[in-house]
Length: 400
Figure 1 (tube, rainbow, N blue to C red):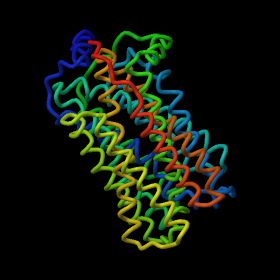
Figure 2: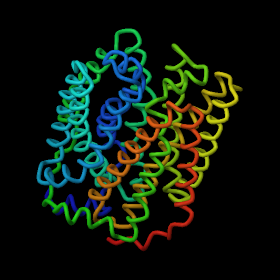
Figure 3: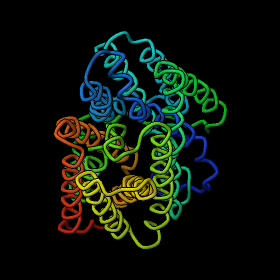
């Protein structure tokens, strides 16, 4: 397939079905497990490295911040590389970085390895999203994006709770070592099963960032960052947050599983809803659910009136609301400037991780004050996202 044909596919003339996107989702599952597994045993990391839980949370913050900054740069530097080679190289880097994280003797070296892992993730996830959009028919685009993002959400449903369970039994270093092995195995699968697609002519970084000024982009990307900040204010500190809600031991794994299952359901439902009723309506429902959920968590933390069933239901709603954002947001961006789909998916990924970084930083500041305070701030951020969505002008006619 020539560079020209890839450009045309990215512009919305792909002819494939969703079957071609599943191997890409396997890769995002590996990336998601890597990105979020630390939340399942963050207190153990803190104790092992002799730092506070908030201090250990910097490992999550630095990963997300590096990803946000690196994604457009990596996309520029690697533009000419064949897509399959880039996907495999990114997964190998993730494997090496996670092995380094598992062996890190102190927090500074752990942070260095998390930076390397973020660079690998920044190379993989936007490429996988753009390739999925290029391969499928236009009417399946949002669902294809949902499948690829679904790898991340399945990681929260299976990878993160499983990592937390392994960390509790065998230690967090073993858990990260297994994540490294998962990334290496996935690299082999991606090399064998991903279609051979060429790169494209490099787009200067200035041109990439100039897309931020487009009317259909300038209002969408800040919403991505704001919504993810709201969703992740408490997530990196979910273990101490659940402890404050009366959930300890194996109950934590079950609550993380409930969150993950909700995330999978929310992501897939959002992909279908964005195609059928439109992305704005889908986001409105998602942000409303998130605001109610965060407020309910804050109320439970302050009053102490909670039961495991209620906490599990709220955890599932939290996951659904958090991960229903990405498919409709990517859909809005691609509809606004379809010919620039790979660029816009990369910028949206940067916005996602910028929001995660900001939310985690805010959570690190508020968690020592109290779990209720953290969830109140998350509620306020969600209401701000809902307000932004309501007052934003409608997207312009797609630029093909």
